[in-house]
Length: 451
Image (cartoon, rainbow, N blue to C red; front, side, top):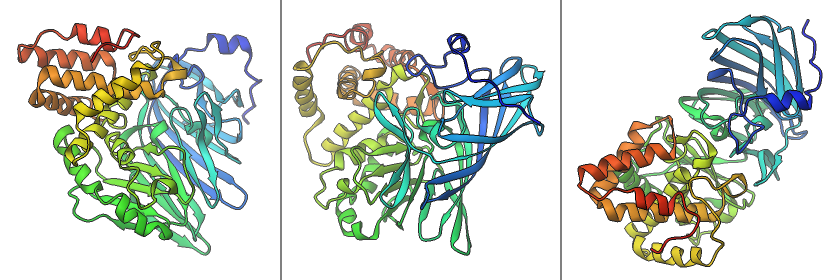
């Protein structure tokens, strides 16, 4: 029988390798996951989650001990590694630590099965609550940046991408939505089991679960399948607020390249209000307050759609490069505004440059620090950087660069240096002056340059 380990000590934590300095408690080393299979049951009345996670991985080095991220609100009943009980396992400090009966060599196949349960709740972080959260009548998962361990054991770092099979059983009066294609829906008495397959490599923070009393529909006039999931009472408002979603998709496919997911795109509106929309692989989640019939959230609708290319398909290796997600999605807002008859990208650049000039000049775009990684200055300064790059390269080369970026790093990870290196190739081919001064001023200097 497996024996629980002793609580982690400060000495053990201090020597543990850090996967990402922005979130030193998240992520694990020594192995790489290729697939998660989650077989879950959720009881809404008691907020009780139970299930089994089967994790397929390969060792990157010789391993006698390994860890998974898992919130302290969830307890582990049993663990198997390659079909056998480990020497011992235990949880402490948001980690499941497993000691193997014998060392595995580098390159060995690793199948970890974890049976667990608990009453999930979001984690308190620098950026507010993230993770699994109860709604007034349902539940949602907001995983960015480190909320995934609140509902399943994982290697929670953006560079660790895997495929997913998610099976969730819940009350039949509710609809459960997860990433990927719905491959089966099985009703048994008062419960329904929903099974989703997400084949494209996805980081853990972009895996989601949404449960509510929802109706579904497919949006018309879209080459890429777009599905809406929402409370029936919000249908009329949705038809106005999201009326131009298909046109957005068409524009972004033309500018950014093919939509990166085979299952299409889902827009979900909860019956509760949400402070901000939430992004997930193939899914964007909005609150009822973003669906008011006045088309006041169209900027956010464009932003979340753009993340399917910038952030979800092409994902940073480390969180310090978050401008590659948020700056690009913010600039997509400006591009949609210009395309749809709103303020031009030039107008928006001048507007937000004025706003930034009145704010503290202490943020380094290429390394803003964990406390400021979601600061609005990252979004707007990132968009301004891209606007100036567009001015130097010209439209043809700029959008060709974006399309090559989303193609070269499709379903992979990248860093700021990868983007600046690719841009340098375009600048050289077009006989444009070297871009080092642009990068130094906008990425690697805190003071806001003149526009």
